[in-house]
Length: 632
Image (cartoon, rainbow, N blue to C red):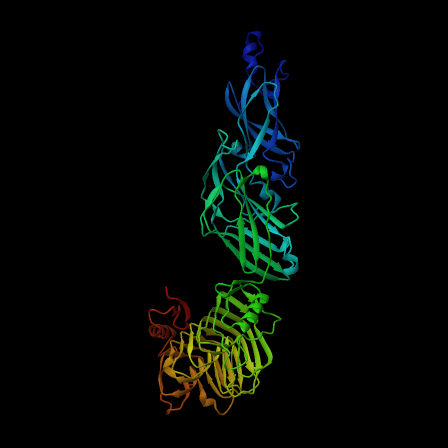
């Protein structure tokens, strides 16, 4: 900081009148010399201040730029809790100077004109540290006490969430809601700042920015709000920048009783520009199926950081034009199931993982041979856990779906920890975790858990009980299956009975215990050549004198046909337990690690699936069974 020495000779009086100094230059100030005093206001009103108590705390230091006849220098000025500024610049009449303030003083102190915001702004200190303020440049005459107005130079993002719906829906509180602004590293976290040199068209003094290279996301600050309609208001300071359409701007989760809801995402539909000195208010309606966000225009700080928002946690939404339920909770899934049983073509898309603990599931399309689900159920890559059907006596077909019809598709779904324990006296009854009977397309689905019956069913399968037509493809089961005295039990399929049936790219790694025909992939096949590129590493046990009807791939083969590259291991018997035509069959091979290993089996199964397959098998080692990967 520049220091000036006072000249005491009378001949220098005129020079003295135009000269500034600091108090430490002299013991006693000459007559007429005064300290420069100022007041500091912030554009708008006090509520726009970043500090939690909405006022100057009284310990802030402002860098004050003073331009006088000797040049331009910076001085440290302290602001008290009433906004009064004091420092060590002294001057005399008739001097005239120009002043401009910057808060905090760190840029000038470090001679580094870069600014950054914190990734975690949840604490008061971290949040406040992102607020960069700069005043207008003002000409001041001697003995004046200028009032400098400081303008916010970063941008602010405000997310309003209303109370409506939360207490009665999931009972969430502000403490168990989590909001992240920007996913991954889409936000620019730092930038280079240049002082404003003139007011803009709105008479506001805003500097210019050049974005830095540091990227991140922001955990915002939970604000204290007087908006009675707001359940919660979140605020964050951001570096002025542009964010591209398609970026995930918000990630939102809520929690109750140890159960997490979400994450929900809001993806920008259009490019957005966050300009310095403006507040961008996002009014969010959060459904269990996702976010609806209304975006207000950027407003200047004078209007504050308030806004109207709403949060309503619901279980699903319904698109009448596509007859599709978008589901986010167990209650929402139940609502879809009820609607689907009224209109069997009603579609469903899962928007998050769902836990069915405590729910005894009633199958969809359940009741008789002529009841078929004909819609599309898209798991959307999500998991339904703890699907339970117990103590149910049924007549025909039972699973998550009773019967899946020819126009139906079940895809991209994982059933985790299934518990299926049912019984029937109907001679053709069938059960499977996903479907008792399937004539449609079941694709990219996985099942784990327990499937059992204490009565004699006709078909029991890890994924599907019975197929008269249709496709099961790219599916895996690791279920533990107790088939009892059921006729045909298979790791993937209980049994198929038509030429139109296709089982391809499927696998089984669970266990089967039963008294009759047992197969690693299927308990019964009419035509073996409908099975393509499948394998089993399951544990197979037949507890009766029909043990000869147990096969590593198929338990009972009706007609002499050849499988298309199917494999098994972890079972000492043959690939096909029994064939009606003198046990003549081919195309099922044991992986023993010597004559055939899993690398060779993988190559052969992929050749059978073909280059146009949606998924292909992949293994990293000859002794490791393959898993499915997308065929990009």
